[in-house]
Length: 282
Length: 191
Image 1: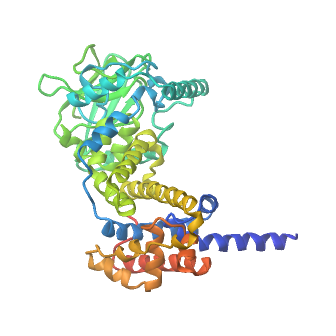
Image 2 (image 1 turned 120 degrees about the vertical axis):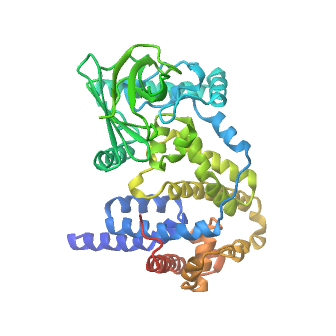
Image 3 (image 1 turned 90 degrees about the vertical axis):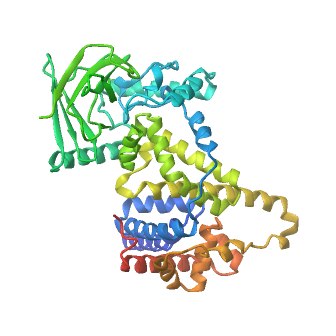
């Protein structure tokens, strides 16, 4: 076969695959064809653009022809109890790895990275999950997760968010950059006895972008935790991990002062250690 | 403080799910489960199986939040695609089972046109109706059987006794007409 024949063959394949793009959007290909189209899409921006365009418009039709319906109320409970405990999951950052044994956490504060402490119902469910016997599958997942952690530590490819959610991390970085330049944003600078300087930019909607600079890494059993301290009573704004990178938290728009403490992994309902850094609106 | 969660956009919440924040997942569930469930019911009809699909979709979001790429579109579309794909898997595996069971009685394994007849009846938006009016009846039928019926284009070709190439073309052409029309009316364009 000559080079010309090869080129013609490639052209024919592309024509064939272009012909499948509509069926691809509708999920109407068999597995082999779908794989071929996906490989093709990875290398053909024009085909990718067509698929995105057809998908966007067809989504509108689907939204109309498959109207929203409310599932039974207990469905969320079924989902919640089926979620693997957080100890089974790959950490965003090896330093944030937690012990493989399920950990009872105080008053449901272990998921307070977006909102503050609270959620007794969730705490109860989570504790129930933690008490469940660890299945073989779970043990395998934990083993794999542990192996991945070792590899990641070995390579020192460590930066929060880039391991699991790189595109999301990129989006958050863009949002943080936008917030830093937005007219309605407020900036807090938190400092302490060390050289650490933590900047928190709160945008007009109350999202806080926490940029820790110089916070020393904690051991695996600990985490930094962000608090608002406006009214004398610290309120958790979220846990940041043991070696935090850029993190987004829901702070609310009306804060005037914040502080960070070091807490046991999973966070605490109230601070248990002295303040590492603190600061007010700058 | 849940009002704060409600104020966060989907991308921020998915990032929080990446940090194992269960309340962020619940907020996303509250926002999107009715659409995901509606689509699963549309394809599967059966409520129990549609709920299984919803459960799988949100469990996957919990396990693999990084699969959502905000640069590629909205979370609702991402979740709907997952739901459709899982619903279709169920339709196809059941059809395969039924075909195996009824192999001796091929003549009775004719296509069901119920899906095609029902499709598009629920659409209220005039703009979407007008866009669908741009399609020929044959294009609407091919798209509907493939998407809501959960059939591959090859199966649709067999059902309609037409060449596969014809069905492929009808689907692609029909979808392009929809996109042209909806974009012309200001809908359909990304972001």
